[in-house]
Image (cartoon, rainbow, N blue to C red; front, top):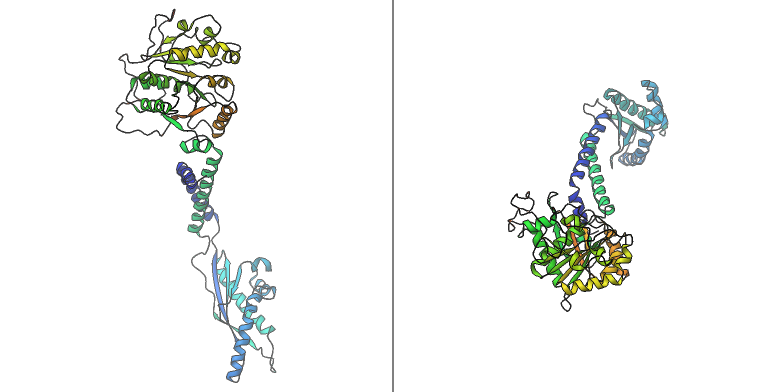
Amino acid sequence: MTVHDYLGAIRKQWAVILLLALLGAAGGYVYAQSMPSMYRSTSSAYASAAYGESTSELVQGSTYVQNLVQSYALIAKSPYVLQPVINDLGLDLTVAQLARTVTADTPLNTVVVDISVVNSDPELARAIADGIAKSLSDAVANISPKDAAQAASVQLTIISPASAPVNPVSPDVRLITGLGAAVGVLLGLAWAVLRELVDTRIRSNTDIDLVTDLPLLAEIGRTSRERRIAQVVRSSPNGVTAEAFRSLCMSLAFADVDKPVASVVVTSALPGEGKSSVSVGLAMSLAESSGSVILVDGDLRNPSIADYTGLEGSVGLTSVLLGDSSLDEAVQPWGVPGLDILVAGAVPPNPNQLLASDTMRGTLEALKAQYDFVVIDTSPVIPVTDPLWLVHETDGAIVVVRERRTKRQQLQKALSNLDSVGARVLGVVANDVRHHERTTYYTDDENARPRQSGRALRPRRRAVAAGASESTPETAGDR
């Protein structure tokens, strides 16, 4: 992942990050409130040499005391000092427990020992601090060298008795609340990045670029559930969706300047990615500029074009391949001038054999000779191998991916399957793009409800389509 990817992941998950930060802060605040208030009381003692008759002796004594004062800080937490305090104050504590509440420090280049005690009772903290200072003074007097008169060479004088503290030193509510918020933010960032790494659904052009160097032929924006792509293209010819399909047509026109593309296979990795919708929209747009166009439903396992367009579906490609009907009898006009459709017909028990047959190749050759452009809607390329038989009979394949549904691994697998048979892939079409760019230049409201003025798509009757009846438009799912 690049820095841009990380920033994008954080931006997409900002609400989760904020929520976790608030929960962390709330948890830290509750935890701080549940902690007992602790008070610190400090007593200070000064260590000095007990005697010195000359300046030299005083200097030597001061140096001697400075060398010992660090040891006195350690002695302050020893049983030799703490046990008398426990006995005098009647504390229900062991020496080890009391030692954990005591801190003895010696400021740099001084002979002062600061003894601090932390306790939930401010008065008891004061009493313990004073008791330890007194006990330490006695201990120093006992362990220091004696002169001829049995006087200690070092004495410890209490210069600042302890006082009962007013304000607690812990818990630090602000600090703990802030730490809780920081932990929440870190968890949110980890969630955002982990989700981006685990969730490999295609969400942008960058995700497609991570999988393949093939060009992105077009981005088809999301349409409302009430209106399918074909309806939007027909009812809003100047809308952004119609322009997206015109862009797809232009991409195909410039795919190969030496050999213009005149026939394509439209497939996808898995079902439900909108390949049939893209096939219909592409065929309609091609009919505007490329003369005569035929859309063939080559998905003989789960055909959808007949249901999508509302055309008669009993006679179609399988009827032609089995010799039950001719092309003129099976082909039906629909939608816009110049567009014909060859539906799949009855679902056969052996679709793979029919699509790989010489009859299928001959049928496609006849269609390419009769029409300026042939669009074939085929099965998804991962579950079955049907598209692999058809792609070599055309100028190439278009792979449709659905934003926030198709995964990068699935697109890679689909392209790998096509590459394994040497198929030519013209590019990728991103379907159902949620953040498709819209500007005020497009004045048509594509998501408006269809008007009751008869502009809804209706199949055109063709004289050679014997037995074809009027039917309602587009009832199939988006396949």
